[in-house]
Image (tube, rainbow, N blue to C red; front, side, top):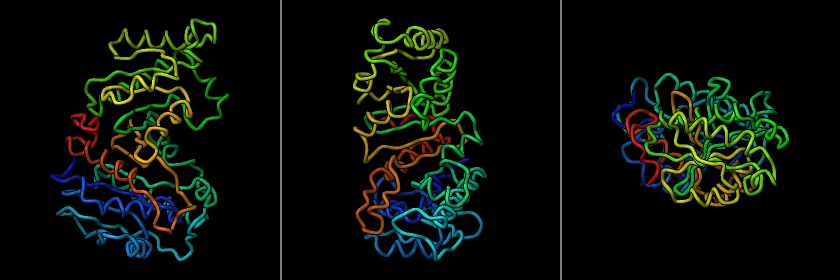
Length: 336
């Protein structure tokens, strides 16, 4: 249960990237972070050193024993390390970032926090550390098979039917039954967020959504039947629409949610519109997890140049749903 003020856990991301910098820069922003509690899971020495280089740093305090009684920025110290590599992946970076994620996940599962925000990790660092998971979402989907990757900005919302698959493999997964089940699941997850009024707009697979079979038949054989079956259940889903215009149809429409069929179909449009302020949100779990929609940016790590806008939006989205009353929300405030 959420307390009278939201409690947001934040995992560090790769310590050699811009994660520590964007976390502290975001939390130095006066809005919308008053009257909330933030817990950063990180080696204390690393976090406090980073704080020295961030103007207006909120100066995280050690997490006190027992129940937190007030808002503020805290840290839960995890494994200290003198071997973190700044500006690139490493085994030690992977060990620290995975340890931070595990500690933050443990607290949100125990309801000591209300939502989880994850800074960007390096898949290569995890691999070097012997961690078999290909990222946060892969790990979470092992715990919650129905977990779903979605992307949110103030202008556009996107769900991906498939993600992080070679294109040939992704296209083979487009079938009537699989797509129907995904639409039902997406609608259920949005119900869990109390998303309210919605329109799920399904992208076609082929140019011009197949143009009545002239440019491909998947729309006729799989996509349209899946949409029709879902609509017969009362789900507000439409399509398939031509993939080169469906995102324009949804842009700026608060109740519209585009369903893209594969990774780049959804994310080229999304990142073009919201690269600096987009948020990756994992639905279908007992808690909401959000993350900035960018990577570790090793090339600018330690230079003070990182833009915290996406992290600010990730924190904002998590806060809005927690403040709405359920950790995932009773009211959709994320549209505004």
